[in-house]
Image 1: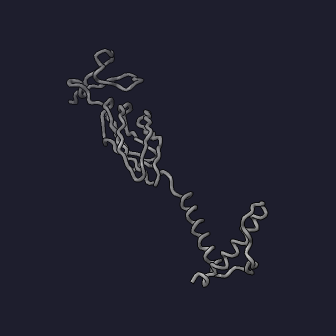
Image 2: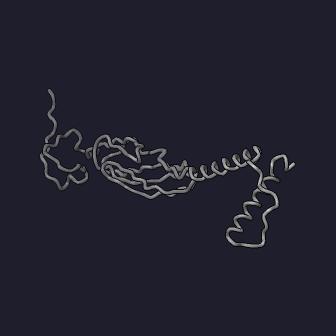
Image 3: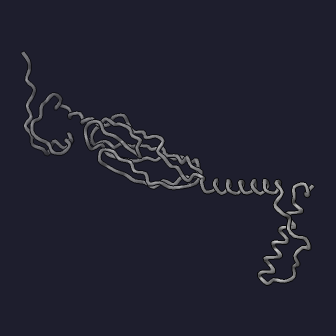
Length: 195
């Protein structure tokens, strides 16, 4: 059966080459076979060697091309609306779609504030992270984490009781906190009644 695949001829050729190499290195104790190596190689040996070579090359390719960690932001959640000065909790879901463990520096921003956290995830693992901000600007604000975003409406605080409908004039350089109006001097006039 082995002779059908040319193994016995290949074995003789291997032994002959080995003997020549050993003799060339002045190692003694092995005699070359009496017959000369076969001329050419049988087709079965060439095909078998080619298959083995392809399998080895394919294995090396798969090992080298094995995807590393692929950590990405899957989802960002934030409240739809908050009031100026309120705390805002943002949750970010991250997932490692790769086949290796890895880490990523995650950057989350809201209303000019930036928070960073290093995330370590195993293959296929996902985590939900929480970030805490303070609503510091009125209007539509955006929470952003690695290209994924969510919008949050930041409303001005309601006026304190008794101040509803009154008009305040002047220029304010920073956000107004109604709680701090006790120490601010401003001109306030009551709305005019229509007749």
